[in-house]
Amino acid sequence: MARLFRKKAGKRKGLWQRVVDFANTDVRVAVTGVDQSGLERLEEQLIAADFGVDASLALVDRVEELNRTGRVRSDGLARALGGGIREILNEVAQPELRSAPEGPTVYLFVGVNGVGKTTTVAKVAQRVRAEGRSVLLAAADTFRAGAVEQLRVWAERVGAEFVGGQDAGDPAAVAYDAIDAAERRGIDVVLVDTAGRLHTHRHLMAELEKVHRVIAKRLPGAPHETLIVLDATVGQNALRQVEAFQAVTELSGIVLAKMDSSGKGGVVVALAKEYGLPVKLIGTGESLDDLAEFDPVDFVQSVVGG
Ligand SMILES: Nc1nc2c(ncn2[C@@H]2O[C@H](COP(=O)(O)OP(=O)(O)O)[C@@H](O)[C@H]2O)c(=O)[nH]1
Ligand SMILES: [Mg+2]
Image (cartoon, rainbow, N blue to C red):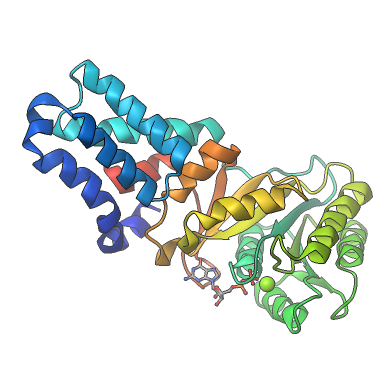
C-alpha cells in the first residue's frame, strides 16, 4: 500500500501539503508552536481533506494539547497528527476477514451503483483461490440487466463455482441456493454480489434486508462479513452511504475501492471515528490482483510521514 500512496504522491500532495507547509513555513509555528488561528486553519484543512468533523476536532484538540506542553514545532505537528490518526484507526482495526469455524464462509457485498462491488468480489475470489481454497460466486444482482452474466465471466476467469438467478429473479433465493450448493459441494467460501442501490430505493433496500436475513437464517453465523464497498473518490458522501446500509444490514467492514484514483483517503478516518467500522481491504485498480489489506501504519506513513 505504501507503494500506492507514493505513486500518487502528486495528487495527495495538495491535500497534505497545505497542512505540512503550514507547519513548516509559518515561522511562528516553528518558534512558538501553533497559535489559535493556526489551529483553526488546521481544522479547516482536515475537514477539507475529508476527515470529518469529529475526527478533525479530536485531532486539533490533540495538537492543542501537545502545543501547550511545547511539543509541537514544525516537524512535531506531522508527528502529532500521525499519532492521532493512528490511534483513531487502530481503535477499530481488524484487517482479518472472519471465517466460519466449519462449513462455508459467506461474505455479502453491498453498496451503491458503480462503486466496484462486482470487481471486488472477483478480486476476493482470486485471492481465495490463490490460497488454495474453493470459492463460489452468487449473482444476487438480479436487478441490473447483464449483471449476472458479468459475474459469470469473472467466475470463469478465476476458477470459481457460480450460482446465478434469473434477471429480475429473487436475490434472496439466489443467496439461499448458493449456500445450499456450497454445502453440497464442500466449497469453502461463498461471495454474494448484490445490486447497487440508494437509500431512496425503498424497495431495493427492503430486498437487501431480506437477502441478509435469509442468509443468516439459512446458515447460523453467516454472513461472516457484510462488507460495504465504497468508492474512495466520493469523499464525505461515503458516510451517508454507510449510514443507509447500516440501517438494513449489519456492516462488519469496508472495502475502499478506487484508492488508485483518489486523493481522498481522509474519509477512512471519518468512517472509523463516526461508525467504528474498519477498512478491511482497498482496491487499487481494475485488475484481479489490485486488492490490498488496509494497514493503518502504512496509511499514516504515506500521508503524514509520521
Ligand atoms: N481504478 C479503479 N477502478 C475500479 C476499482 N474497482 C472497480 N473499478 C471499476 O469501477 C467500475 C465499476 O465496477 P463494478 O465492479 O461493476 O461496480 P458495481 O456496480 O459496484 O458492481 C468498473 O469499470 C471497474 O473496473 C479500483 O479499485 N480502481
Ligand atoms: Mg455489480
